[in-house]
Every structure is written in structure tokens, then in C-alpha cells.
Length: 393
Ligand code: SF4
Ligand code: SF4
Image (cartoon, rainbow, N blue to C red; front, top):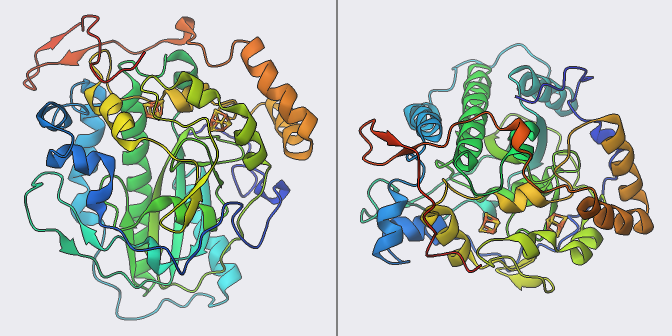
């Protein structure tokens, strides 16, 4: 959890962020095709599309560190709780969408969410078919999901840990998995609560999403599209979060997308492209892909690094080095304000980020043990310095 103890009703002052009618990257809704979940890089690795080595590594790349193993075990254990019966009677609560939205957001913050946003669920964001990671050869199951609204829930991956790790060492997957499990825990309780209020609701969290999450986060005003491929970047958390979503028919008031100058920042910064160990992130311009305007990313290279990493568990180097990955302190809030309002401040921030050594691991903050669960039966070893065959540099 974030530990931002002095929150008002929201954790972060999102009312200070400029709202716009459309996301700052084009979504051509007429062109976007629903995609099968199997098109995602992790699904392709699990199915063997990237070869037998990555298919084998896929089965152990999360559980090979005991902490990420524990967190993903919890995610799996909650899987059957994402949906359920709706109460026969609607609860005697207000029906005003604005009041209900405020209530649902406060509920999510009470459940320890770090950021919450609401949008109408675009039909194109729903996967066409579900993929079963545990049985990649099984028939893909068509998905029907007609809920009207989506509630995006973000969980901070922890700034202290992110300043200690190098980007692709042994804590990386645990940072992801703990945040996924936490976001799932919140989404499951929130969806259950909404169903008890008399409205359908379903929780979606990793790896049990029925939806492609980035367009939901964009439309819900939780960030802008960044250079890190399909990643949305939040104005106060940067890319340092994982997301869950609750879809529902509870009448809600959608938020508007945000504009905090990220398109200009990412077009010049390129630090993630420079530091990505697999060379997956482009330092070029944006492209249109399936109706979305975005920076291209080589999904095969990124998946190869995260799944095939032999010197750690996963990879989050792009999250680690991004200048927007900062703590919520008065100094960084002031810098953030300047960066949001001035092109000169953006240039200075990029230059100063390297100069001040941000993005380098701070060993004094390292708290975890480097352990590798080699056989999956509790036999742990301190890992050797094996080089990933998927690293370019
Ligand atoms: S390989 Fe690592 S740094 Fe590169 S895009 Fe993937 S997660 Fe980010
Ligand atoms: S490192 Fe720079 S270019 Fe990459 S996502 Fe962050 S701000 Fe954008």
C-alpha cells in the first residue's frame, strides 16, 4: 500500500490535473478490433510461439522467487471470486451517478487503492476470447461482457523498493505480483459489494482479465499513453503501478481523460528506450496499431527478457528509470507541477534526472534476499550470475 497517509478524499490531487474530452493519443473506435487474449506476449510465450525455452521458462519465471511465488499463489487462490450472484433487491441508496461515483471511489480508497478512475466500458476493450495459461492447448473461450462502466484501480509498486532494485533483479516479479494480488483483492471486494447493492459487477485482475486494460485507464483519466509500449503513465505514480478493473452496470459518472504534457515529455526523454536491457522500446515516433496511436514496442523482446531473465525474476527497468517514477514529496510535487506547465521545465527535468543519479540502484535500501527456487519444491539457492540469452546488451 502507498502509505500516503494525508489523503483528502483521494490519495492524489487529481483535481489539479488538466482534463480533456479525448485521450491525448488517438483511439479510432471505428478501427479498433477486439483481440484475443492470446495475442499478448505472455500468452504467446506460454503457448510456445516464442520457442521451447521461453515456454519452459514461462512456467517458472514467476514462482522462481519465493515472494513472487507467494503473491501469485494468492492471486490464483482468489480466481473463483471474480463474479457471483447479484442481490435480488436493489439497496436503498442514491441513484445519482455523481454521488454513487464518489461513494465507489471512496470505497476503493478505503480498501487501500492508490488511484481510482471511472469510464464507460468501450466494447472494443473487451477481449474476444479467453486464454487459459495453465492449459495453453485448450480451446479459447469467447467472452461476452456487456457491462456499461469500468472502474480502474491502481496499486503502487512501492517507491522505496523501486529505488533499491536495479530493474531486472530478483525482486522485480514480486513487485508486480504483490501489486496484482492487492489490486485483485480490492477489485473482488468492490465487485462483491456492488453485487450486494443489487447491480452486476465483475472483477478483472492479472492474469484473469476479460479486458485490455490500457484503453480503460486512458478513458478513466488515470494517465496518458507512454513510450513504454502499451503502458499508461499516471501523473503522480508514473509507470510504477499495476491495475485491476471492476466492470459493472451500477450507474456511474465517467471521469474525463487527463493531459499532463506526457506526449511532449516522452517524445524527447527516451530514457526507457536507452536503458531497456532487451532493446524492446523504440526511440522513434508513434504509430497507429489496431486503431490506437502508440509508441511501438517489440513485445517478443520484452517478453523474452521478462520470462527468460536468468539473473533475476522478471524485468521492470523501464519503470525503474522513468523520470516520472518519483515519491510523493513536496519537492517532487513542485517539480511535477512545473513539468506539467512548462516545456522548459520538462527539458530541465530530463537533464536533471540523469545528473542527480535517478534510475540507479540504491543498495542501502535493499531489503530482500536474492533467492532462486530452482526445483519448485522449496530448495532455494543463491543465484549465480547467469546471463540471459535474451539480453541484447
Ligand atoms: S525488457 Fe524490461 S525495460 Fe524493456 S520494455 Fe520490457 S520490462 Fe521494460
Ligand atoms: S522514461 Fe521517459 S520516454 Fe520513457 S516512459 Fe518515462 S518519460 Fe516517457
